[in-house]
Image (cartoon, rainbow over all chains, first blue to last red; front, side, top):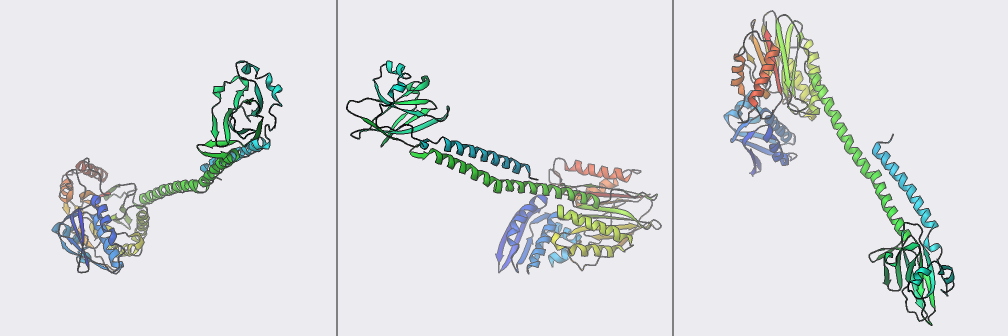
Length: 99
Length: 430
């Protein structure tokens, strides 16, 4: 699992590659720790190379989104693999995550 | 009541205080500078008195002594230093020799140093005579016997000062430990105790949050099992009778730990009471959702599946909030994917209905089952679960079904560790 954070035209792009499950979740949380608390963050989540996300890891994404939104920012998932899309659909999160 | 580290520290402090008092008294009483041992212009004065005791030595070839200075150590076991200044009339310094009473040889005297204007000698707790040899035409004067000094390399520290410094050092050490080190250790143990108490409270809450006694009615069989990943699990299940209907709930709470367990217990109590009112399932889901959303500090979300079976029609009404697909008679239940609870306060759920029949078997579970992974990183998955359910023989009790599934998941997982809580609920319409 690899997290790549880049800035592009004032937006933050978070690209996650590999799998997000119980084991890699903690590392992901460390990687994004620097983003919490930033006001008005415009974040994009590029999950095109994310093969799988466990329900636990999904909660981390939700929590991240909630933190960003409550600090006046936005977070949107810009691309997602079919497997992960299915998981989003099942939990009814496609609406809020994909926008 | 003082804690035991503090009691020990107080004891040490008291003991040390007593020691300090004793040492000070001793130092004061037997202080070297209370009296000069001997000061005389004429060292010859006392020669006769010691003549007897040092005669043996003198017989062995020492010249006639000119006079002597008696130095007496305070205690038998103490090593003491003396500084002597002996000068002759012209101001030239003289090295005294020692003759020790009680049979010690001269070589047992440790050293004899010349240092600027005085000689220093070490005497082991014995009576000691400084014998000064006669030099013709040179009357000798003992100018004085100075304070005892302890020598640390080139630093000369007075004995009393030395005692005071050492005492002060230990006193500071004890005060530091009393006021800082011990409280720090106590705080550490408090934290550990608090953490342990928190954990046991959390475990209790979690235990009480799930149904332990499964209702028995003639028309159904029900059982559920929970296998937490860590000490306190985050999966929840409840079941009970509401009127004549069988009502059950399975859920997966995010964020494990002590705070989540409190929320779980709260939700569990809430659901148990609200369900009795005969609330429609979708309204119940809404209420649960609002409670979670209204407590954002816990940062919790929750998947939930609520179901109710009518014994007369055998119709099951159910409401799903982002939960895993239930298995009914070997097929996945049609569950509209609806939002998990705790995200959107205003979300409105809807219920669905399905007809069951006598002999219907339901399997509800949390994703700890389907997302279980083995050493090759393969998932247990929905397909395998469905195959498992289809392979179950008739006439097995729900309790046995639960155990069998847990075993199957465990066997699949092999040596890989459990990565999530597992909750399983089996229902059979008889």
